[in-house]
Length: 424
Image (cartoon, rainbow, N blue to C red; front, side, top):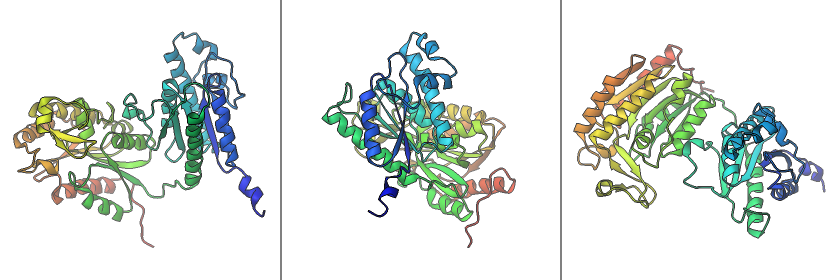
């Protein structure tokens, strides 16, 4: 058939990662499935003690060397947790090198909790757009913290995947192979950062409405606007893209993930939320959007106090108002994070509320508590943080105008890279 040979030429290469002593059969199966799709593979062995049951392209000695150790040194640690952490470091470094050289287009990791722990490290080391899939017995589990999940990571639950191939296990692996190849083909050569990108954190428009003004204003100035939904993983994705150097500025205006973490909510982006931009010197304009609410899962037990005041957004998530004591604790944490920033940092404080639900007559309305928050954070922000007080609610146009005034002033001063003209 005309073009048949062209069709069979591999166009993407998938890096398969697993322990080649215990998962040789599964790795070989994945290689066959991906090659049957006309694509190429490379196998990386991350096992430590056993003899590989399949010849890998990257052996465990090379993985150990990438972590700055020999395999014997890693085995001599005498603890599987420490050993696999070292192998994870090596695997992540090698995968990042292969990706940077254009030698791989995607990564597929298989394993249980050990393999998943390693796979999360590898996925975080790779840029947005490189296909990343983990086949795991603990996919979607509550034991995986949000801060360890790469922003475009895919996971699939490995049914029947503990010991060798079977019908269920093979079905999952076949889907994983196809998904990784499909994702790699779909993105190959298409992820181009053509305009400077600004990251904005927010919630849905029923809660925070400033995007209606800010997004078109920034786009008119030639920026690409990337919005992050602050429900745990959204904030972590913002932090990850900032870490990858993809954002010229961050408008971190919804900090409910920070307040959730302070108050022990499961809807958290981890302890380092609101720290990456500051650590890297990325210009950031910050506001305390939605810190007057703490998220809970309607399907999980909660205290009687929270249950009494709880407002269910849907069957997955809802909120209860934060107390005055809560707000004071949140203020201290936010100020502490911003005071460590190494780059331009501004805090915009709306005096009349930070959430549509805290307007008069709504369930989060707490003028005394909000006034206490405003006073507390004003007294704790350091001299490196520029401060703007707005006599308005966060959802009023005056707030958005104040944010853009700071943004434009910083751009004029050369602190933020200028946008690209969209004129023809």
